[in-house]
Length: 112
Image 1 (cartoon, rainbow, N blue to C red):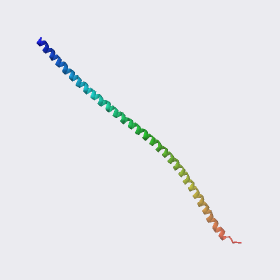
Image 2: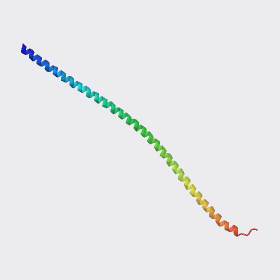
Image 3: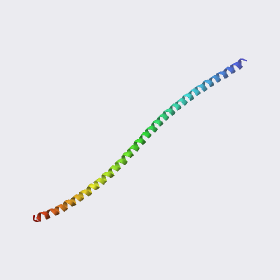
């Protein structure tokens, strides 16, 4: 009977050790799960922030594209104006040449 009690005490001690080890393993798993959950929250926050920045950058890009379109229109308008100015200068130069040819004729005609 004493041998049986000793054997049962030994089994009880082994069971207690198993329970303790299982408890430690469960606690470690709980801590690991909490770490993973925390990392997941941090990753989600980072992803949300990046998505927000991406949206802001897309809006800035759209605004820059609108500005570029406006500048292209302005450049085309200025190019047209420059061409018109060049045409006017050519007309003016032609008129000045005509006036220059006409002036000597007027001087050489007798007044009278």
